[in-house]
Image (tube, rainbow, N blue to C red):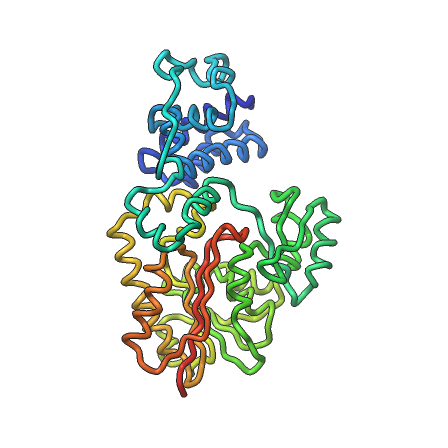
Length: 388
């Protein structure tokens, strides 16, 4: 496919997204309907689509309309590419620009320039302070690809060497001792021997830093209460000796965890919700609660535009319920860790303050806030100890 044909495909997909179709579904359907498109074409189209989603407000201003054509036109102007070189109407290229489209778009300003929903600006400013604009600007760009070196099988240095032998260049990242940033050939990772043999796992550096905050000892019974796909369960098991359990209210999310654990050479026992009531208490319970995902909007930009005040209020209610339920599983003098991939204080510090207000017998030991300015996703973790 020519670059112009790739942009035409992106326009078609973006129009479907704007009408309500999910990005992954639209991209998959397009690929199935256009089997002539090679992997390079599919990756390029995907990049155009996700760049447009990250910058939907600013690209709409620059392109003059919130349509697939408007977003692609705005993207070209934002990156300094002459639109008429893509919108030629020749072959599979997008139709030539109209006189109206050729007129200069509006230069975005304020929240539009930062691709931030207006209604979230006050809470983001309260949460981020002077970091508000820099963080929002960072969220407009693609996220780095990070790997976690599996200490059960290799040191970070050995993992880097193994990846290098397959043409994948990485470098250590300061957020976590196991974190490796992929600087060349990230799309080769999942087919590499290093990945398939369990030397490395895909995981954001900030997520790894959250796990490193937890002090694990061999005697512990450790529960990942909102395990999802099990990334943090694997990270805990890969870096410490203990007995590890994983639970999720939707067990289907954990379906790949046994395979991933086997590949990593670790043991993680999955528990259904009913089984938690019969289980002995845990020395450490981690609840990576459902949240707005605002810290990971670079990776999931659809979530930024789908979030509403009602949805956020519902998430905050769910977080409070998760905190109360998960903390009740902690043994006396045990540890409860609450985490989100959110940038919002109302999901983070405010939740911990409210939890301490309605649950006597807990002490806040530490809390940590990470933003994309540190390199990874935005994350929050609070570590609390129960009074024996």
